Length: 135
Image (cartoon, helix red, strand yellow):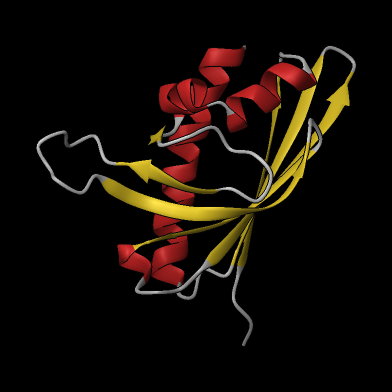
């Protein structure tokens, strides 16, 4: 049996460049996803941070940028403690459309259905915030 692949596509009433900035700019990422320790750029390692400011180690999720092709494609690894060492891959594909941008996110390597279901719910919540910001 192969690991499931999650694919989500949303349509945003925003330019390709504006959507791209929301995927890589640390200030914009914090508004719809999670605070991050740096802007995402080519070959950078990064950490998403917990909202719990009282914790000494706020690292929540982390990864490495594998492919960086502005403003069309971003590929990075993605993991967190609940994945127990499993490294997944998230690919963001952006396509300019008349009047907006098609954003497709592919999340690969999630090992169990329970984790897939939890990530699916989480991505839906984050995409709702992104859509509200960009529409």
